[in-house]
Amino acid sequence: MIKDKEIIKERIILAAMKVFSRHGFFKAPVHLIAEEAGTSKGLVFWYFRSKRELIIEVAKRSLPLEIIDSCLESGLSGEKLLECIGKSYMEKYRDQVQRRLFLHTMALETLYEEIAKEINSLCEEKLSKVAEKVFGKSSIEGKVALRAFFGGLMCYILRKPKDISEEVFIKNLVNITVAWFKNEGEP
Image 1 (cartoon, rainbow, N blue to C red):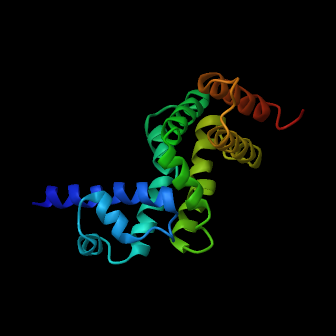
Image 2: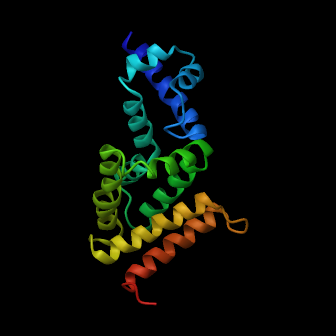
């Protein structure tokens, strides 16, 4: 019985992801989410007390938090950790639904404290942990290098270059990030 409830809840979340990615968080009507999930609107509200609660759940899932956690938990360090993050990031956001949701979520930060908290965790705590594993310390230079790394990944998924494959891009981005840090940002 509990497993069935989890399956239905997950089906609603996946349906909401599709609908929100097409219509945005605010313009997407709950009845479309229910239709996509094959449930009733009432059942959506049974699992999520409000549309706001559903938005927050979907928005959190659209962030690359689990990518960083998974790569950190893998025991990798240095360039291998950056490669893990880069490859996982590309894999997740290759999906158009995830990519669109990520962009919609970035716009929610000022409206939802919960989302701002998750983005802050991504850009501060998780970045510091990655810096320690990649560079051996969490310094200003390391954090700047990693912010540039994530900016490069985001730019790639938003406007995939026609002449650079994901593999070549990640390899070069990792090399540039590590080299920049080793030179402490000097040109």
